[in-house]
Image 1 (cartoon, rainbow, N blue to C red):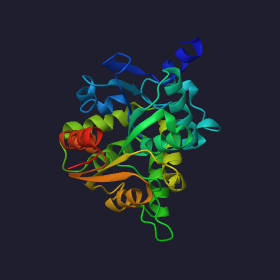
Image 2: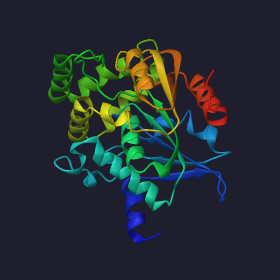
Image 3: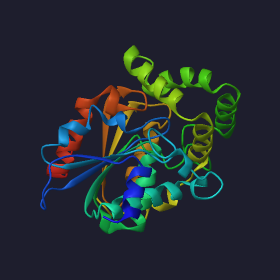
Image 4: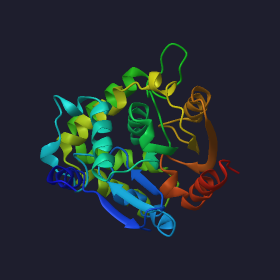
Length: 277
């Protein structure tokens, strides 16, 4: 491993655990807006017996190198984050990786997989959304004014926004511990980076990328998610060449936290049988 590879892994706070050996496959997890790699604490350990498990933080989040976040250039689009992901895979000399991404990280993974498909074997997209804004017959879940108001609320009072948005994202009926954990994750994030990344996220449009993704894909969708409604999961499933959709009976935007066993069951069936129950 070169010094440059080491700096890439430190930049993205990459951690590796689980099975080792030349024939062991790798599974990589990437978190969404306001989170960090700890978001996968109920999911990732399940795979450590059979996989090399790679966790990383998006640049600007968690324990990543905050100074590496470039809002005016590289990280002004999701493509910059896809570059970061591909650099991590290159630094670890990984190919045929199972990628698991949540929310916007799902689409970061899609962009990366379209660019370098040989790096990926399967994709698991948890609560993905290629476009959050309704337009021209596409139902993304939000009107333009809704996004403008959400971003204005972040700008006006980031801590207050975090306490109000976390229950919506997690699901109003979920345990207080899960809601508080997500709230604290938002609060720990650098507010300026979080506000910038939120703007990049909610204004992004990666629908055109979907037609170029040929890697087998599982879409895990909450049945009651107001951030990425069921119509969005259905849309992605229709656009992809090789995908299957699993709807989990839970609320909120984080089924890997609110319904980890159902999420794991869907993933296991997909990874081992290429089907879902």
